[in-house]
Image 1 (tube, rainbow, N blue to C red):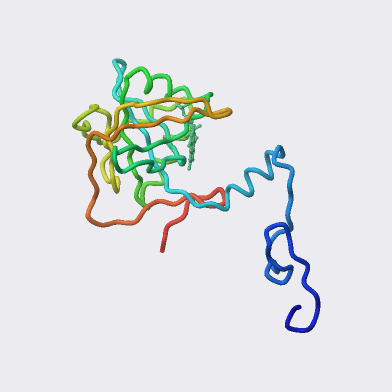
Image 2 (cartoon, rainbow, N blue to C red):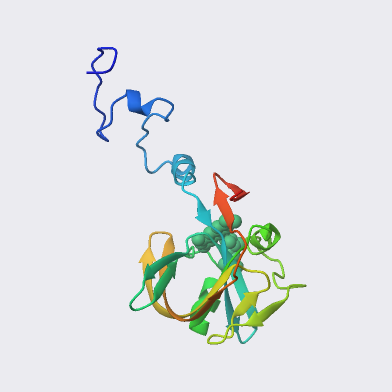
Length: 186
Ligand SMILES: Cc1cc2nc3c(=O)[nH]c(=O)nc-3n(C[C@H](O)[C@H](O)[C@H](O)COP(=O)(O)O)c2cc1C
């Protein structure tokens, strides 16, 4: 019974209709790409650039699907699209470095998400101690990994990385991606 005596109808999620005031109505067609993107875009992510050192020079792409996986052993993961042109080069190199972008690095995020550009042109970086992959100047953190496993994940791959070295800046805020736009925490 609600406060005003009205009977509340429980929803599939077990919440009352009153509790859902202001929340979009349920929509269930998981094959609707626009709906899928709109709903999943409510989940904020950090923005990383995953880099590798290849015989033809450095490669890298912007990645929001980075996640911590395991502490013991130390594992991380990310999901490159099957259409990614950098991923096969990263895989062949056998190692990668995850660069966690700071809030003032939107330009890097855009460059590494734009096809057919020289993404490293005019950018300063140092080689990660294990992989030699680029650590871009000004990033909040870097995680230097070996490729420890790759599995199929729909139209993406799931890549497991064994962490070999890592480091972080002592201050600064992250770049955040939320509802299709770059944001800052503050
Ligand atoms: C915020 C953000 C997050 C992204 N996350 C991913 C991701 O997790 N996996 C992926 O394959 N592409 C992701 N992309 C898209 C790639 O960066 C983009 O398609 C890029 O051009 C791929 O480059 P490549 O073909 O050199 O691999 C993301 C782009 C942005 C802006």
